[in-house]
Image 1: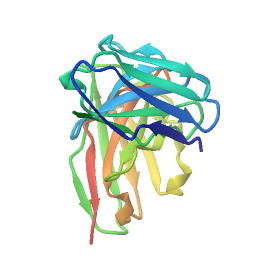
Image 2: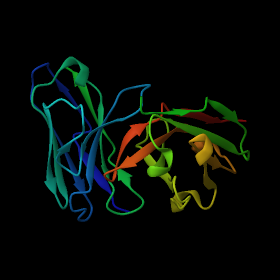
Image 3: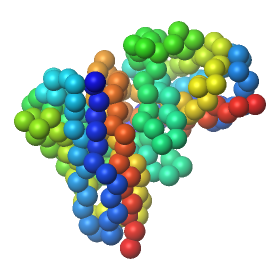
Image 4: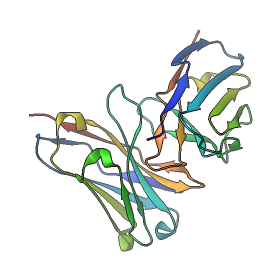
Length: 107
Length: 117
């Protein structure tokens, strides 16, 4: 299975901060990398698919980049509703696998 | 409105089976595949299995060693996941999710399955 390593596992940030989360795959996954936002008690929400494509309705402050093994999710200006856990997911090879998550907390 | 609605929480004893449903609304059910993903307490999301809602073709994670079975009823726009020989480690929230662009764009609200004696 492809192992996905996310960092950091958690971070504290203030509203308006720029936040960067990284995800590394244990082998090349081309651009088959997705990012999700997950809030307690709710279903995960797709933010970015194919490494850099913003899902419909997702605010433009979210962006994704990277290819092969190294990927980044950036929130350009953190908003109160962005405090959540973020997961990366590879869908290049079955079984699809997820990172351990990055919890974004209020500073 | 495009959504997936899952069945309610379940409490089962070790060794029993559970069947979770996932009903689709607002889109052509047979045109998309459905993934099942679970999250145990404090753990990462884990992919369980996939079904092509049109053909019924399935793929399963080897981690479940034949304990999981996916089916669908196209007339009811509903997908089902059955997990057998339950053990305490299967306690988790189980999600169904629609596949599009090799991602999951619509998720069900989750079904809590608790395995306890």
